[in-house]
Image (cartoon, rainbow, N blue to C red; front, side, top):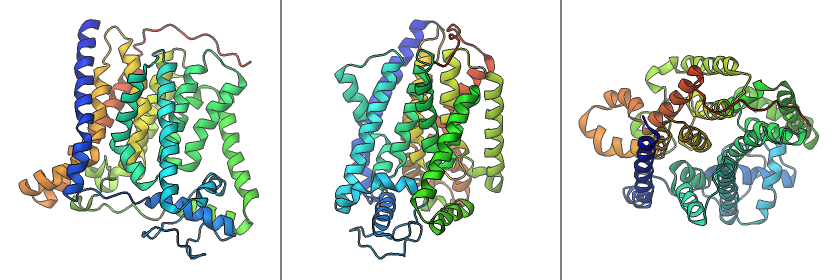
Length: 421
């Protein structure tokens, strides 16, 4: 296929994506009117907010009943699950009323995410005009994983910005391979993993450089030591108990008529064997990464980075559709790499974007208006795994990445030696 044909397909794909995203505000309004999606609740933000309030008063971070706090929310908060040190950034927000603090938090992480995405595209060699920046910002604002993250006030947005930062510094690393650059890259890799361990696949690039791996492990140990110094021994033990027992919910497979807009279950059709399938997927990708190392070309770096991101929602023990936000930098990396190829498939990751965008809303509309009228609940439950739009987008993107890594089909030249300065 010629470069011209690929460019035409790319333009058509971008036009299709533009139409889908332009219609999204109307779709959101329609779903709200049909009572198919929930309103803004800041449910997850309430966990961080009330944990910070408890920390300020000397109460337990991990015992939500330790202090009866009226934060202003009507929801019953869940438990705080993260390392003690990560409560510190939320303390300034507790000086605002709860609702105001939730919107301030959303504004901060969205600004970080948009800034990171724009800088990543610039780092890939494509400076953006003001019009393009506005289009990207608008697209991110109506992107369903972004909307769900904002409705819940989830820390997921901050983690997504950090993951984009990993992509930025992987690009910088080969022209500015200083200890500082590698240290920032190691920190940006460890930060989201320390908060949510299921993001660990992002560390695939660490296998390419033992020094960066040691740095990242050291930063993780630093988080643990800082947490130990910050709280009492009993409080630190409470956090370790959280790690041991897990979050304590989300393991039950609910019937599809009870799915909310956060559900994403790529291996539901396998039932109890789904965990084994996810484990096999992770082990296989580790093997592919080790086969590809050393990462001697820019394409290898980008595909390993994108593949680790695409693996996170697929292989997580319990993922929600907001985790699909992590695929934004993966789509950017693969899209630009494919566009630079003579026979690239840049339109493929572009088409994955609306599929991911329509995951939750497509499932809700599909069940409410189609499946419930065509088949029994039992039969629909079997078929719904294959009818999740996000699964197709996630799976197609991951498959393209794995294909490129296995075929070693790279056009760009070898990178210079990376001697740390």
